[in-house]
Image (tube, rainbow over all chains, first blue to last red; front, side, top):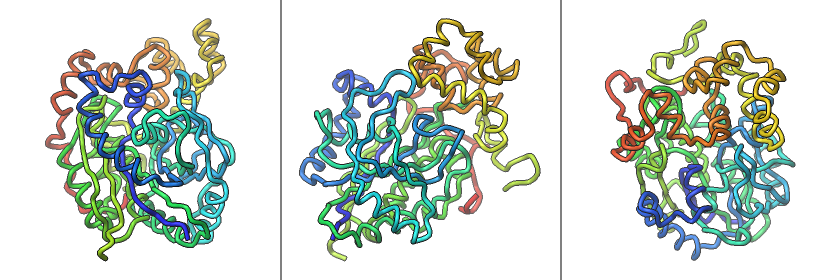
Length: 282
Length: 134
């Protein structure tokens, strides 16, 4: 049977992708951040998942206000990087896993999660920056990738509780899949940041650390936190943190923290990086 | 919670939650911004800004805000930051440049604020309600 081997959470800041693409990782501004990424890269090189299921949000690239799916699952064989307004990132196309993705779609829908099935879509920095963080700059990504988009741009996004329950349903579906794939699930976006308005630049490290603590130890409680708390405390774009709850829901109730790091600033964002494994002692 | 035309989050200072009210107001504006994802549209807009804007049903105020690059005004007229950022990227600006413009400081001042840990959450911005779904 297929297996969920780990959960990874990371912010997905566009300028981090630019820093990687333009070889600026050792610049004084970026070096302290990328030093914190290195242990996660080493872990990834050992873990070598066959499939990465990446939970992220599209930023007006594959989707627009014309059609706004709350949850959208990519079932294609291949996804090209999006032109987000300044040319596509120079990264490889993402190779999908149609068989597992269709299994997920069927399982989730019959499990009462009414997700949207996507046969054609590009993938933007929300998906490609996390891959670059964990894999660097390979000629081809060393894993299959299944994109799962969550709407967090048009308010309201799905509740944190719904995201957590979706993660649990994803876990049930992967556990039931008759393959040998080892799957890592990514929750991306966050942590606190506000890009818009007079309050642009908001960072709330205290909130973020409390979020991380509860995400790890008591995700059921964190899943009950309402949107307005995120808007006020983590900034209007900090609400992306609900996507980390999808990842957490796909893991066991008890997890082992493999790695945890935070860094401020990466552009306007308090950047978080987390690697969790199921706790084998339970 | 929803009551009439106001929302409980409307009192968050300096924040324009992109809900249905703003989405309706800003639909054409945001779709114009998104059109800049396509290189041929970027060229058309570069060659003839006014003519290109004629192909979108912007209000006069939205049109002026686009032409004047009034980053805060664009939000107040229904723009969403992920969409309006495409216009900023078209100009070669980054998120810190327009963050500075929207909050009324220079880019250098904004960068320094971020290096010092960002804008703190203070006083009336803090939430005290019980955690609930909303």
